[in-house]
Image (tube, rainbow, N blue to C red; front, side, top):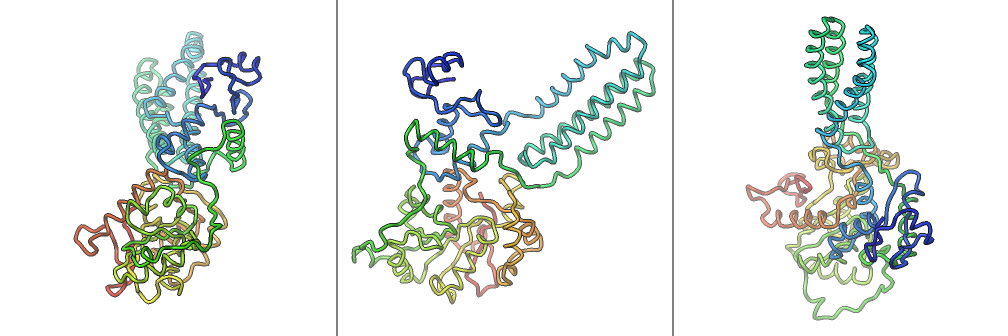
Length: 430
């Protein structure tokens, strides 16, 4: 295991003899993978995750973004179609080499057929279960289904050849059964089931505490949003101006993330959360925004019952923009964007979200399709923080850029509530 300070490779015996420290520079290791029972992580893996999620320390990120990033990194990512088919061939070859040849040479043809039938039945079951498992991403499940199709074809072809070689109709029937079933199960529609995270909150917090204890704080990881200065003075010259755009987030963590990465400067827009973050300038900013009759408001939120209620709150609350006083554009996340995403997003589920979905108001429900409502009522949700910092900023930039010419033929925005409405939604997310 390499030391993150001097890059010296330390073997387990050397780490143990030196009290868990590098033999070269004496820097203490934060993690010892050999002592971990489930998920294993090294100092180099953790350091690289921090570097990658922050794009070489150029972007701030939330703890939850690091959590999701590490979760994805902890999964097996190198499984591909060719490798998995090769595994099937490997198991069959060695089963034939070590046991099959002995059975055939002993005249135990039926026993050989039963053994190979059992092995390939097991492979079929394993890959079918994986193609339906919430432990894997949608793309991984697609790969497992494709393996079933390819391997089924190979079994059919090889079975026909062996049946001719052994003059056995039983081989033909058995291989045909496995091959056809494998192709059939691999061709079934893959359900877009929710996905489980494999890292627990408790384990993640332990990793953070252990890392910061030895390597100090993580420079680009944002703390919990706090606003101790509630009455910051704003120059009259500054408050006399306004903004053409406002991004409203459903949670202060997202607003803090955008502000920390200077999104407001680069896009000449204000960034606030629906909870009033940052409180120190909230009232002054709202006063400036209300002066602009051409204001565009961009709603950015999780795809959850609470998140999709953000636009309705902006339109109806007296603290925001009632009576259609501003154009509101729902950037997302929305269920329709998730459903159209081809399973590329991390969809999770909870009973709390299912209960909240059942309590959605009629005003919110009227803008959702039956499929979207059903998706929400199953408790499904997607968090914005499951996107990397760079990806989330890119998506928001594109959403704002695509709304400059409302009503144009190439606009990606959909008007809600008829021609008199001033609420739009972005057709896709990313």
